[in-house]
Length: 226
Image (cartoon, rainbow, N blue to C red):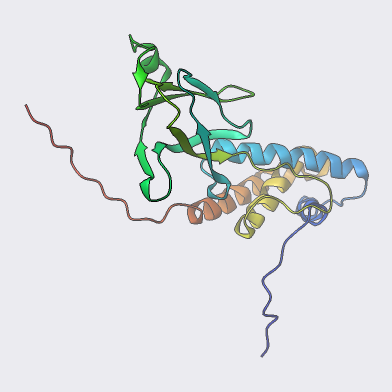
């Protein structure tokens, strides 16, 4: 028995939408069918951002800090930050020091917001358009770099020839999710909506359970001294 010895299977937008329509018991026939499915697909990927961490969208970035400046813009595609450090030096002298993330009430309660020094805390202001960070203390020189790992928004669906910004492992989940979304709009698919929703949730559980950190987690009790 011989196999193909290839591992390139994927679905472009046209094929993905066609598969979703077929699961609804319908056919992709018109340009409007493709447009409405593309719109639903874009909404689906936004839903995924709300469901949790999509590891394939994690991206590292950095911001050179300016002495006397506390607030900086993050990329517009930022959903949230996973972790962040203050970096000094480079090459063999590079040193990264983790800084803690604080909430709005915690930052607001800092009485001396104009203190300067090496930043040890960051407040992330998740604005609708341009997310921002505010550091405390305010950087006192230009030797610091804010290095972060962010969750980036999934790319838009694009046109018919585009493949989607997902690992191949998520293709069944995306097709199932799009079929469920389309069933809410296709009258003759209404009797399939509940089944398609259940199938989507099962596929999401399979894909999201696999797409997780697999490093060892060590939990140690915190020692306190009185």
